[in-house]
Image 1 (tube, rainbow, N blue to C red):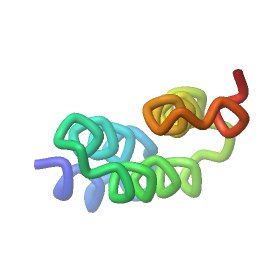
Image 2: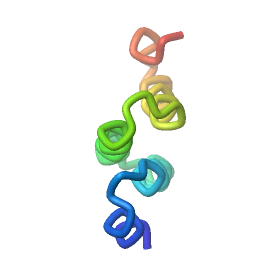
Image 3: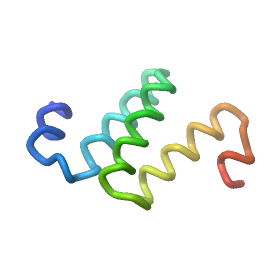
Length: 68
């Protein structure tokens, strides 16, 4: 479902954002990071995607990368 939305709306960051959230929830951190990066490629500065990357960094205990 998320993949078809990404295909239909290639400029929209939300499908990749949602994919990142799903992957993070499944514990697939590197894939989640790639999805958040893809969302940012579609919409640089997309706040929710930046937050997703920061949350991944916090999960890993990397406060510097999280911007904390």
